[in-house]
Image (cartoon, rainbow, N blue to C red; front, side, top):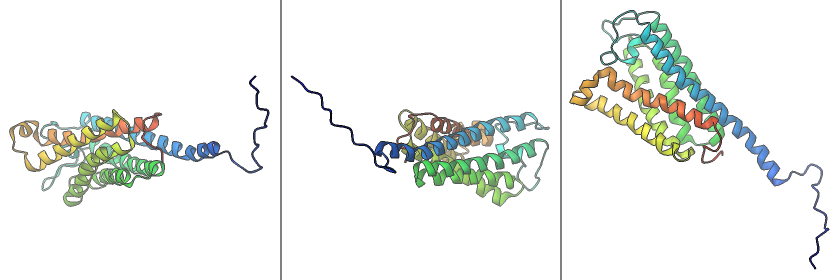
Length: 233
């Protein structure tokens, strides 16, 4: 005949934590950091799209996405730089604000995952955006430096973010990053190639920037969700 054990379960001593409870409590800050990072990054990505669209719609002169770069909204390049309002202010301010949001998001991503391979290029992406806003196209040298920083680091961040994502987001992140980086190489070295030339300087630049911004929104959404990261610490 089977008997049921009546041996009492060991009680925790005063001040003693059950291992599973201690683990749960340690994971709470990381979960909060992950969701905060997601909110910042998704909001930044959406804001970039909407403010660029707004600046283009309010641009008080002919504006063509094939011939005009995104940065033309802030100021065209020397020697005859043109700054047109209200587009310039909308663009410059939005780049600074969203850049700060991306840098803050990178900080919380690092707190959540402690993966410098992910957080460093993400922070550089934000710094590049800030620099583009602080130094519009009429400040040629610093503008180009910060624009290049944003172009390269955005694609690299998307590729390396696969380290903290699960399928299929992991694969999608890599594909988006590769598209951005390949577009950058085409813009640098094959601008006269017929398919690239047909897009124009403004068109190929958007193939660099928009995938990275789309990735920001998708990555942020994944971080805000549940069960989308490979590890939370």
